[in-house]
Length: 150
Image 1 (cartoon, rainbow, N blue to C red):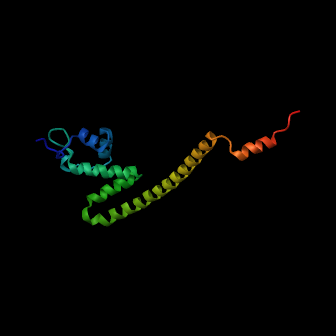
Image 2: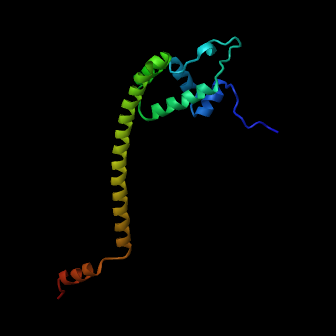
Image 3: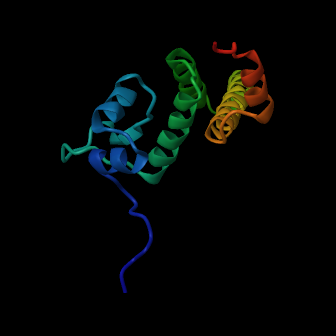
């Protein structure tokens, strides 16, 4: 029976694919010091080995990146994680500040979506009204306003 569990190690290409990144972006994360490679930094065989913890970390980095966390803050967060439990409060604070910014962005986008929904609804109503022809009052007003021909 085939195994349905995830592998315990990944190649760079596999990790990048699973995480939804290109190998170049993964390499960029490494170059920026955002991925802790630990003892896998210089493997004997030449091919770097990644573990499920790397995948979970990349997924988290992607969330930080997609919510607009600046690279400097991502780097700061990574440095704090290297500090262990002594930096838990600092990491929490950094994430709370970022969460507040992301929340404000969501609120702004929600307001924008409401405006777009209103405008779309307005145009739907206009299209319905135009396809139904002029309103009865408008037809009467047009007949009254037309000058008589002689």
